[in-house]
Image (tube, rainbow, N blue to C red; front, side, top):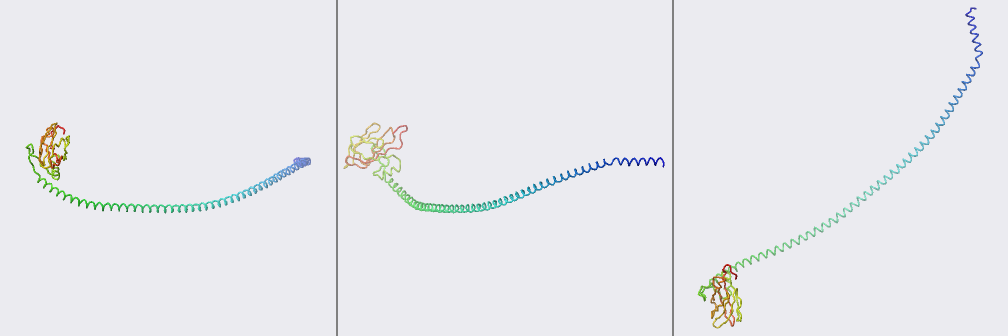
Length: 302
């Protein structure tokens, strides 16, 4: 054999020897690997068991949770149902209360409206009655006023007639009056012989007139703004005697006749003569009037 073959054989032989000598280590390695595999398997099995146990516990927890959730859902559903029922009941009660309130309010409104209507009707009737009474009163007053106006118109017509008649009588009476010369020789004013003629003289307004009834006394009596004292009266002869006091002076008018102007001056009061006329002579008494001028002396008191 060649050296290559020898070498090869030697090498192969050496390899077999080496193989024969290395076998136990392989077994050990294999054993160790097997043990390791078994350990790994056991570990994995334990892990799997633990995982399954955990999974079972988790599933139980999930089941419990689901049961709890289902129970909660049921409670919630029941609560919601109860709440809905309560809301429905409340809504119904509210609607019922609202309807009742509406009905009560409607009834109250109708009652108030009825009372107001009755009150308004009463007030309207009372107002109409008051208006009717007032209208009746106004009508009555109007009728009275109309009647009064008619009466007044009639009275005015009558008064006008009376005035016209009086004026005619006055004019006639004045026309019948006469002037005469007084005891001082001065033409007198119109002389009145009775009360009717004296009234006519007053209407003319030319003088101021003061009627008097003088009795025989121991002291003078005031007539107008002078003092007069009757000294003597003679009814049979219609004569009289009197004393006149004016401007602190005494003037005796003796044996004068009725309707004769007894004239005298009161210088401090007028420049025209005063005239005293006696219309009637009685026992110890004379009746007549005093005519005094309206034009007084300027700056002097009466």
